[in-house]
Image (cartoon, rainbow, N blue to C red; front, side, top):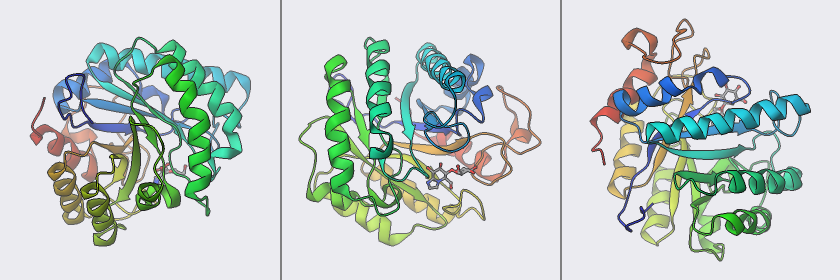
Length: 292
Ligand code: IDC
């Protein structure tokens, strides 16, 4: 990522859990605290489209709640001086074309509403899976991107890749005709090791713009043991190429990828006791990152 002066800027942020499930963490004091105390510079707003009151499966009032949550989230992030990623979080709806019409309407509205916000990035499909091909993702992206570009010609747009956003090589072989898109690679350090790190390094060395919009320190289920040795190897690699990243997830769900303990009820100004193992580790990691 480069900033408005064309200087490399590494986004280092945290992703919410499903906005329909843990909306309470989207509040001004939380975002301001994360910026000042954890030293993150971005928040990703993960809006599930299918499961758990997803945007495309819940009723109209649920949809309005999600839109209000994004509206507030962007406002809080902007006030706090954070970048913010609006994430169309496909998952069990494996192919983004399943809800393409809704995605087009959603991103048209978002880009209109946030046309004056230079801190907003658009992530148009979290993790295609279930055999969804790059061609299928590419044709979806070719319909969604112009809708955003009509309002925001220079927005940074993140595009998911096949197999839960791991096959960036497929995008590299047939990139989109757009100079301001980035392709996402997601990793869970307990599951994904050298093979995926090597793929990332090869693609980046060949000039592919890559954004790690989601990663976890545990295994790909979002649970299980944390692997901090593998996490460190990953983050060293990302820093070597100044690749932007966001950690999963800002919640107190009883799973290792949530940064807070299930017993934590604080919604900002967290103390050491609120964090579980992964949360404490990544909070300390963010604090040690060179800041811009
Ligand atoms: C997981 C959540 C978990 C939830 C599950 C299904 O951590 O609480 O029950 O989704 O909704 C991803 C996805 C992300 C997953 C995460 C961990 O983008 O939504 O969150 N993961 O499984 N890709 C790889 C791992």
